[in-house]
Image 1 (cartoon, rainbow, N blue to C red):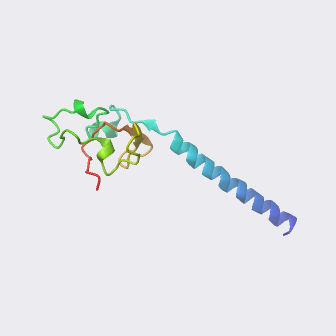
Image 2: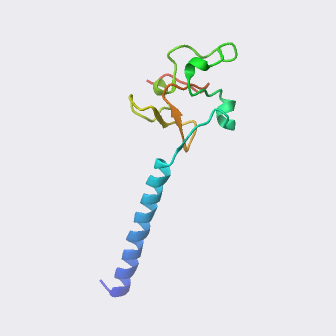
Image 3: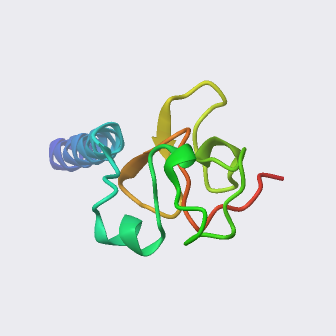
Length: 104
């Protein structure tokens, strides 16, 4: 391999490593979804499902919470995790919103 080709190759390897590190950092820095966030408000998100206004949200039922939703990206014992509805944010396992769909 010629010197110039080797340099180009090494720069490409370094750039791809930096991109991978940046993507992992972005995932690690997801912020908790606030109930006051406009998207959360639009979907009636509550971090504690027991505090959902049952008169306003007739689709809510006890036991329906984020960690039993199809959009939940975490494990069964995680307190918070990513949600397919709120990119870049994490939601509470015991939370709820109107986008809740039973996990298959």
